[in-house]
Amino acid sequence: MVRVSYELKSHKTEIRIEGDPRYDPKLIRENKKRQHAARADALLNGAPAPGVSDPVDDEPAPQDLDY
Image (tube, rainbow, N blue to C red):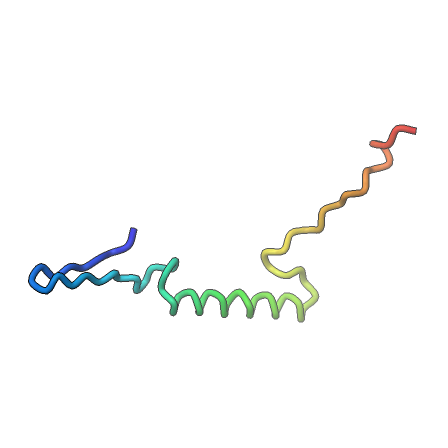
């Protein structure tokens, strides 16, 4: 839900996005900055990057093979 203000006399409408993490550019930039910093820190420390899942193992296990 987004707040909207409306002035009856002037018919002026304003969409208020401040503080909404979906639309507020300031919050979006801060969030991206934090994500990039966390990723860089993880890569520099040898840990897997946040938000990256383990690679998919598409090789069948030996017990799953019919010989």
